[in-house]
Amino acid sequence: MTSVVRYSLVFALVAFGAACGDDKPLFPINEGGGGAGGAGGAGGDGGSGGEGGSGGEGGSGGCAVGFADCDGMPDNGCEVDISSDVTNCGGCLAVCLGDDVTCTQGECSGVTELAGMVGEANHIIVDDENLYWTTITQTPLGEVHQIPKHGGAVIVLGAEQPLPGAIAVNDTTVFWANLNSPVINQATIGMPPASLFVEDSGALWGVAADAQAVYWTRDDGDPAMSGIVRAPLDGSNPTLIAMGGQQPYAITIDAESVFWTDRDTGDVLTVPLQGGTPVVLADLQAEPYRIAQHGDYVYWTNNSCNQGTDCIMRARKDGTEAPMAVAGGQSAPYAIAVDAENVYWTDEGYQRVMRAPIGGGTPEILAATQPGLVHMTMDDLYVYWANESDGGSIRKLRK
Image 1 (cartoon, rainbow, N blue to C red):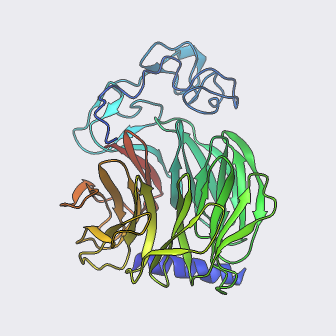
Image 2: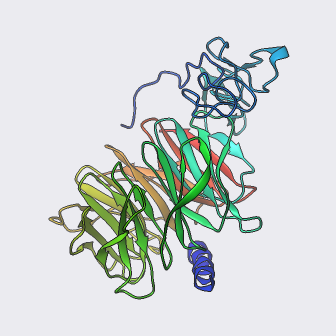
């Protein structure tokens, strides 16, 4: 299976070294796509300032609503109509994919490619303004990137990273785990370069962050040293807050607890943010991979469900209900996200983005034939995903 082969190789290298009904357009953008700010400076809606311009996305702060200066050349002004241009739809370089597609009020009629030829795009995360992702290319070393959610200039937050994998963000900082180090590195949003957050041991498969701390899974090979690690935002005193497991893997958090999967044991577990004895919410799962949480439930993908009935699962956070299958019939479900109505996931076997109601139901294909599809994330309006193949790409689709 694709994922098993890929991460077996990664581990060998480590050892070696609301569904929103709001139909308003996603701009209005009246400043060339990103707010005022000098080159490399702080931009408004688009994060950091544009390349050589005075606003986000390489735009100019003087553009009328729906227009942007995408080429950064002052002589031709705000040359792009981002309200209708299918190659700059809603933002510079945001391309509407497919035949007979349209761009209406800055919105593609189908899938939007925000960035292409980005390398082996892997883990991806979103906040209020930007997308962040890691590339796992090893020659040259991998990188960590940032781009405005509506499209624009890509910022390299972390260059020459040794196999960057899982990524997380809080209000100020992006954190990611380097599998070949192993370390957690960090960069201030929109402000490279990267710096060391903390050194650790083993394989660091998952990472999460909030306003107080960073949390990650440590797969040390020794259950006594493996589990969930927590460190305050200054990186001091990393503490193993939950011990045990064979391959602690993906992680998510809410305001009170940490939740994670163990690929080897097949367990889905939880522990309070401050630590304690892990509680098993589900066991004997078919290689549980990624995990998400919303409301009273956690949701996860069983990567080895082999088109069975238990591909997308959920369980109550307090463990008072037996695990329940949300969807089956998937080839190799991988990443997962959830909102108040639906569960969304990627199927790397069938190479498609899917969704189903949170209480169970018939799965729906949102996007098919996505090359090298792996990780995804979402916000109130869109699902976003990373494709590893065909040069690598970052894409989105309205929910």
